[in-house]
Length: 401
Image (cartoon, rainbow, N blue to C red):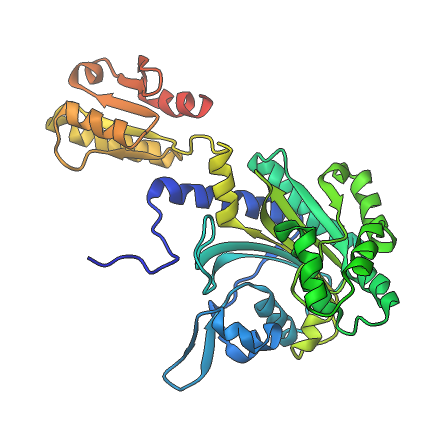
């Protein structure tokens, strides 16, 4: 018997519906904020992927050659594809606000809420140097978290530009990205371990950590916090000078979102040089990304999902009434009601068992006695309450409950 590949999984309807629910909520918020959808290929030229992330990325992605010996790779995020798209379409009106939702692949070690095949949702603004653009993506993120039912989430923010300016005072820090990668581990391995690694790499841990700890909101961070205060999301933002995000293409503000038990579920920042580095025009850019699988895992833990099943299952008292069932089902579907009926010629009790097993909230019983009265029997599967009603009232009763 074949099994799913390592780091992937099947999603049965009950779990798959959660995915579509979350994605629909995210897309709805993205659209309200003026972001438009973009669809790009699932695989890209390996040269593009390595140009963005370096040759070592080959060991972290699904790399392959096609039948013409071209080097390709499955996308591991959307930023490289967005940069390529902008390079190929330089005349797009700016700012260009886009969102993208889809599957990405990374050859990581599978862990809790971390898979090799997973779903990501991004929003990005291209062409604006204003802090307003950074505020906009953060505001959008907060609206998404609110719409999904999260309460105790927060966003760590910092400025790589500000921290780099302060670190240059040391003089000996020739490669600030090496220092950034180490500092960024503070929340994962602790300050002591960070100091040890800095020392091992030849940096002065005391001076560096002193600068990190003394850093206060200035410049773009202060401006961002002002916009956040004016718009009611300031309590969600936490300045943290140790946040720099390890990716070198970030140039300014960076952010990371936490929810549940302090688990990261998204992040991003400003990357003003990336599009030019990948062969495109000089364009400012900022964006943020959601890990949809992580969001769903957290929502399961926090019990944020409400029952997603809707509609009715029609039970036919005997085979002679099947035409009545089909007609009723057709009418309900035409009114937008999710509706199904038995396809297995089962007895009444077995039909009821099946309706209970699929957790449908309502059952309609079509019987001869009820039809003679011009009625049908509606059963609420949660309360067990039964009500004899007119067929045309079904839609009203279900949608109002």
